[in-house]
Amino acid sequence: MIVENQVPLQVHNSFGIVARALHLARVKSEADVAALMASKHWATLTQESPPFVLGGGSNLVITGDIKPLVIKVEIGGRRLVEETTRGWLVEAGAGENWHDFVRWTLEQGWPGLENLALIPGSVGASPVQNIGAYGVELQDRFSALDAIDLQTGRSFTLDAAQCGFGYRDSVFKHAPSGEKGMGLAGRALITRVRFWLPKPWKPVLGYADLERKVAETGIRQPDARQIFDWICTIRRAKLPDPSVIGNAGSFFKNPTVSVEQCADIIARDPKVVHYPMADGSIKLAAGWLIDACGWKGRGVGNAGVYEKQALVLVNRGGATGGEVMTLAKAIQTSVYERFGILLEPEPVVV
Image (tube, rainbow, N blue to C red; front, side, top):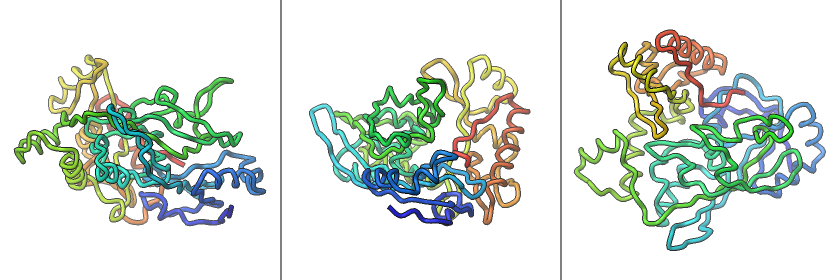
């Protein structure tokens, strides 16, 4: 196992921020992880701080060179584990590109992930963030995952309940707390993820953009591939391509408020975009709140708010992580002062 030194990270984060990993190891299999942990580098490089696990770098803001050991997960592989009359159980290596994996499942005739098309990042990062879009969240299709404990070297498997999924949240985003704390941030390296795609397939269309596509095309009963194509078109029209304009997708979570809080905001801003949730709360569109505060198209230094979607912060060329976070904090302040809501960032800041 080779550990590289002073590795440029600009191509490994979708924001395109210039930074370096002081030490970086690429792992392509579970055996590579074991070899790394048994190497002479491991004890030295992890003595002061836990390693930093890097996937596709699409949900990351780097604010300086990364001193802890960076483990770049490049574990590949896709396969059908099992097919029954109830559905398909499909597995992918953590290093697989998420969108490519979604497209591959459809090409094999296994629908169910089409609403999650074109979400950037790797398969291994998908349960960490509990990614979601257009009415579907990862937890709706998740079966189990395999991971390695970076403290003990032991392999383990988690089901959905053990992952502690929440809105853009999971056990992997929280540090352990107490003797029996379940947080796995900085401790677990996900190696493989399995998804359950149920039969019979049912389209998920209860989202304004998709309903608009149904009305525009007259296709009342789209198949999974049609929905996949629609979502790719919608996302490309709204969101910048990271290969052209550096960004990390949606930068803030959509906040949830009580019915009373929503009514108070509507009384002041009748056009606020909001969605009722199954638990009785109301989800507000963070992009609308940011736009209402006049941030669309504005920026700090070389970091800016995307002109077509206020929820996306972009690198206009040469932006630093510090500029991105200064802009993010200014937006948080504006939204809080006007609406009394503190927006929570989605990306990991390191």
